[in-house]
Amino acid sequence: MTHGRKINYIDNLYQALKKVIKDMDLVKNEAMKISLIEAHLQRLETAPVDQLQREISSTHVGSLTSSLKENFMVGFDQVFLEVLDKLTGGQLNCQIIPIMGTGGIGKTTLTRNLFENALVKEYFDIRAWTMISQTYNVRGTLREILFQASGDLSDLSEDDLGEKLYKYLSGMRYLIVIDDMWSIEVWSKIKFFFPNHQNESRIIVTTRLSNLGSQLNEFNTVCMKFLDEASSWGLFCKTVFGKENCPLELESVGKNIVANCKGLPLSIATIGGLVKI
Image 1 (cartoon, rainbow, N blue to C red):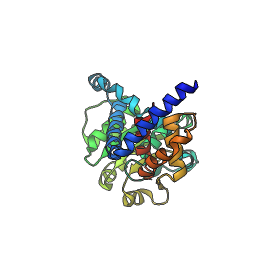
Image 2 (cartoon, rainbow, N blue to C red):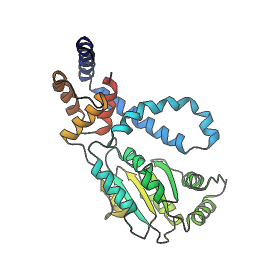
Image 3 (cartoon, helix red, strand yellow):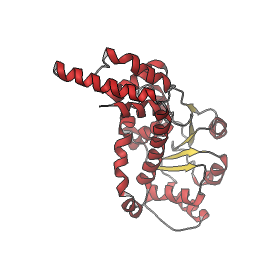
């Protein structure tokens, strides 16, 4: 990069940083947008083909979350390894692994990284993902898991779907992700349909409710915490500058922005994406 181009680059980036720092409400608003986008992406990834065709116009959404998915492990590498060990650590009985943390802390992104990990893909015979949220539908949840596991889109009753799922999973080493659970009620209605045949199957449940995590498995709970100052700055720099270092003249305003994100990865990555040139 020539001297003149570098000065122009730094000036443009400085102006972008100043604009963001004047209105830190963008952190909250954009983080909420990305959270909704991730939820929409999850539906697209698990939806039947006909639904995908109807929603294909939404594929541009992927570019908005790519930077978060690429840079997310900054500050969370130890948590990733902890959960990976729980997934493949050799406990024979079916283990529930609750992943807890506030909204925007990165529970879904962490779990998606694990779900798509090469070792995890090889380790489990079957992997399936469903999102519960505050309004849940037991029949719809069972149907979604069965479809992802077997390709079966049977239009059956709740009990029949559960029985069919149980039979299909029997003898298989499976990984089921239940994302964004808000109530123990839904688990009490579906837990009987996941066989425990001592073959190292696993169920990950993400939730923002600490009491729910302890109800599911208090001894196996993983708590995601806010990023510390160093990790927050590292995530921001990686999002904005990639492999380059932050120019010294921008550190002050950049660190001011990061401090206002309060260690929330989704906010840091979102703001980083906004000011990236």
